[in-house]
Figure 1 (cartoon, helix red, strand yellow):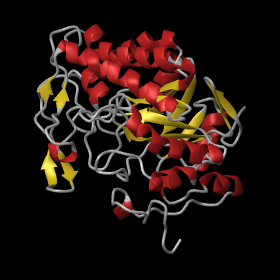
Figure 2: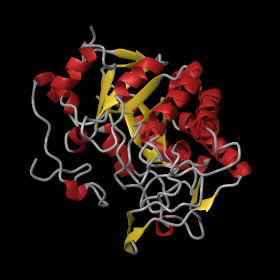
Figure 3: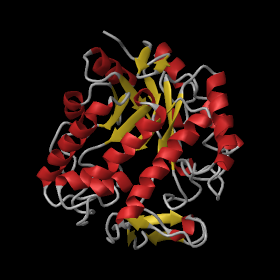
Figure 4: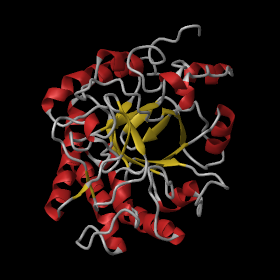
Length: 359
C-alpha cells in the first residue's frame, strides 16, 4: 500500500509525494489583490510538497472578503501569479489555484471603492471581520443575487480557471466550505431563494454543480478538485435541521460524480465537534471515485497510517507548513516541524512568512 512519501497521480497531475500544502489565507497580497514577489518566495520555498494548494483567490473583486487577499479576474493579474508558479516549478513542485468567492463573509473596507457584498439570500452572517482601516467590524449586510447574476458568477469561475492555467498553475480547486459562497448556496440556513438556485434540494446544489461543470469544461476534469467539510458551522453556516447536511452532500456529491474530478479535498470532523452527524472521509470515499486528500490536525505518523489503510490518498498540512518550509524533508528524517507564531498569520511583511527569527 502507498504511504505519505510515495509518488502519486491525481487526475492529470504527477506528484512526487502525498504531502499536500493546505490552502491558508496569509494576507500578503497587495491591498488591490495582486500577487507579490514575497508570495512567490513563500510558495517556492515549499515546492517539495507533492502538491501546493494556494490560499483562496477571489474570482472577482466582489468575491473578495478579507484584507490583503488576492484576486484573479483578468490578464493583468497573471504576471504576479506566473512568478509564483515559476518558483514552485523550479523546485520540482506542483501548485493549484484555489478559487474562493466569500459571498456574505465580507466587509466593504476590504474591497475596492463601491464594491458590494452579495449572497444567495439577504441574510447577514453573525460574526466579525478584521479590516485594516476600521479594526474588527460586523459582516456586511449582503444583497441577494438575481438569477442572472448567479449564472454570471458561474462564468467568473470559468474565467478564473482559464486565467489560472494561463498563469502556469497545474490545476484549480473550488473552495466549497468555510461558509463561503458555494457553501452558502448549499446550506438551508443561508439559502432562502425560491428560484432555480434555491427552494428544493436540487435548487440548492445547482450553483456549485454548475461552477464545477464550467471549470471542468474549461480546463479538463484531470485538473480540477473540490474542497469540502460537510457540517462545518464556521462563518455562521447553520442548516435548519441536522439531517439537511447529510441529504445535501449526498445529493451534491452524487451530482458531480460523473464529472470525474481529479481530487476531493476533505476536512475531517471529529466525534464531539458541534453538529457532527457523519464521517466526512467515509462519505467522500463512498461517493467520489478520484483521489481523496484528507485534512485537519494530522501528524506524519497518522497520515502515513491513514494512507496505508486506504482511508485517503494524501494528507494536507496547514500549521506544520507555516514555519517549516522543509516539512517534507523533516517527515523523511523523522524530525518535528517548527512551531509557528500565530501573531504573524495575517500580518503584512516577511516575518513569519519567509523569515523566521530565532528558528
